Amino acid sequence: MLASLMPGLRSLRAAFLTGALLLGSLYVLFGAEWTKDVRVRAPARTIIELSPYVPIGLLALACLLVGSLYMTSLEGLVDFVHRRCLLVDQAKKRTRVARRVLRAVAPLSVSARARITVEAKHFFDEHSKATWVDNEAAVVAREAFACQVLADLLWLEGKLAGSSLESPYDQYRSEGELRLGTALVLPLVAGATGYALHVRGWYLVLLVGVTVLVALKLADYGLYYFKRAHSFVAHHVSDGTILTPSMETLRRTGYLGSDRSGNLD
Image 1 (cartoon, rainbow, N blue to C red):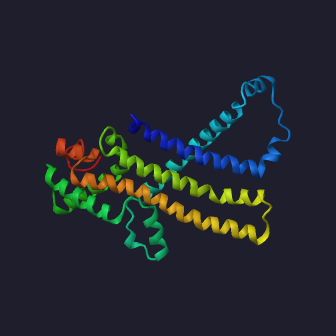
Image 2: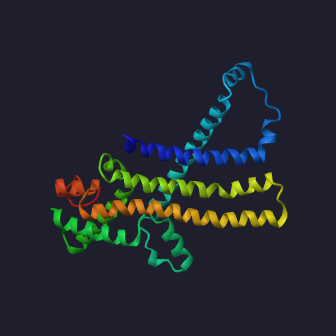
Image 3: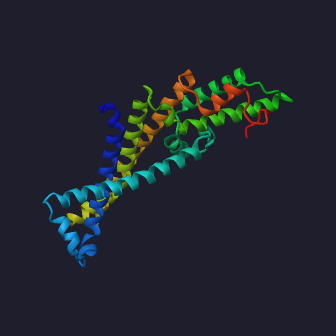
């Protein structure tokens, strides 16, 4: 039973931590201005005075709410970046910085992408029943199928439900979310800490600068765990443990499109 609760607990951990960091930092920076004219009405005061623990509980709920909204937005951003970078060839980038950035934000490792591409093309050759006018059309369809399989890898979480692969995949994703979500708010936390301790001048610049460097490294580790999760699934797809929706359609029908022309719809 504990294993079934772990995904939810990991999500709560990331949401609570990031929400607490965000709310705490914003309160330190702007709390005096926000709360100086606040007047609590009688019904709200009655709820707060029900127990000494009510304010703590309300604060915890606020942290969870803010953290959940923040992590949901972050997950959408990561998914957008992964979809944009999925088919980009790192070797074609001219500068080392561009290749390093692309390697960090890419959803798959180089080895996992190379392997799943080869296996997808072999799968296509084995199961496709479409007839081609020339070899060039077959090559185009094979490449398109391999690209579709790569795209499917980003949305295979549902197919892992109930399998032995679900737990390690969820663990990798959760570790990535926690590290990346924390990294993005660390500069704000550093600024709030410096403000609270009356750190000024170059000392504040140094504090924020060092925190930014730490945040960049932590964000890199977070993206690495996202990549590890997708690469984990990619290798199991390559092994035939699970199939993507495109692979299942091709194996079941022998065709990529409803018109049986072999072209992707």
